[in-house]
Length: 364
Figure: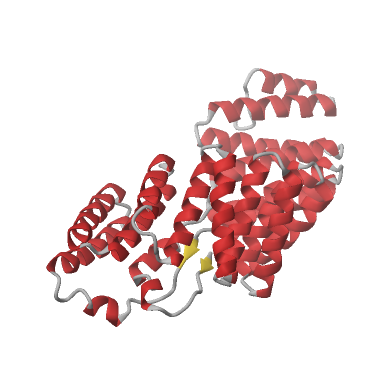
């Protein structure tokens, strides 16, 4: 999400192929992305060094392979590149390759290797490239978070935050603060999590980065939701959905609409819950996301029953039943039949309820 801004020194530039790769990383964690091109000096410095020249080709090749989804081959190319940079004694490029390997490992969920690559990167030199050091500290913190080692996660992310502040790098502060918030939330310290996420939101709003604002609003909504403070969660989720739709990001909007509907349901605002579930259902159909469509239909049925509108609930449950059968999902089919039986009993339609009891649905 964040374009890292630092000084314009050549040592802090990152190849454009790396930039394109980094922008694919999307999860609640905010990762570092770069928009600098390949500097001429970077290329010229390697023309007289066969090891570095071939290593650079392997670096580019590895990133291209990753973009094609061939992660195993990409890692092999990058590891060969690393070996050549080691032979050439090029510490700067070793840092970059190790950082990239750590990030590929992170996106693959291989958190042990994230830690291994990152630690090797940090041990290379006493005078590291500060932007790469910042990335690596972030990789370490986020990897330890996923491994539920909250103490180490906080240690590395705090170091990352300190470095972003020293560099006066606002965009990277946004990422560090947000990610610290995620760690504290995972550790059950919701108040501290909110404090960091609010700081992150304030900065990202100053930067007018709507993609970042959307992500942090969602994370804040999730934290307030975990605290059972549904009105607060709703306020953040509503803002998040509005921005997601303005950014033409329907998949993200659909994810948040699920929580938004659930939060409204939790406070007894069933009409509003139905409104949000219906919007999620609409987006799911547009996205051809059958699983989200099925979930939305189930949620709509439950909300209609909460309002006492059993006839409408049956319409949604019938649609869910047909969808479950088209997906050949017997577990969901059984759930839909059970819901239909209960709704028919509530209406006094015992004959229809018995049909559903016997597994005879509306398509017979």
